[in-house]
Image (cartoon, rainbow over all chains, first blue to last red; front, side, top):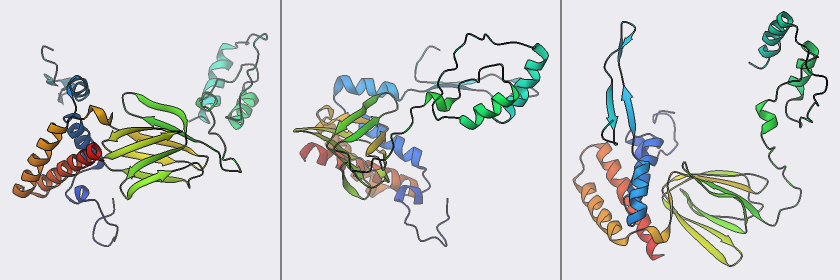
Length: 74
Length: 201
């Protein structure tokens, strides 16, 4: 990305604050989802659920993974 | 990568000495990858060339010399394809530069979309969707690809939640300190005001 100094392109306020487009877009999407009427709202919030496990590797072996999940019990 | 393929495969086949069935029909490969096929045939004439991704893809319809009567719209979301090759008269997209009307024959454009209303006009019917943000690619041949993360028909929006959200973010905007908090609060205000005008407009 061109730095602000030297380029006259107007940057959107969120990029000037250090946010990337993808974060901006995801924030907009989650705000819209939170303003929906009921059955659609729960369906939509399901789309935001994430489930991933992160493990650090040391000495060629994976250590215990940290699980981050919106679906409990896994 | 494709250039290596004939070399690697010819090494394998010369070791195996396989002859392909002579009854196999060579499928009419479309314009696709003629240079790959020629290179293949030079090295491995006995085996049919594999299909490359190009032959699976439908070629983009060419730009007609006269302006087509309808705009073909593909409106997609990450989880579903809302409109797929639908022929319409006009779409109005909420570009960051303002509401943009796209008619058949529109100049090729790429625009970033802001949270707002997308309206699809077909004959006498107008279908409106509220889009959270996304992009619109309009091609010279009157095809428009609109992509968004979230799109909902206007009647699924709850006005009370919108008002509450607007009040909440306006308040956050005034109390925000860091740039990032201000940006987030501003995004909240923008999205909720757009939702508000979508409901009333």
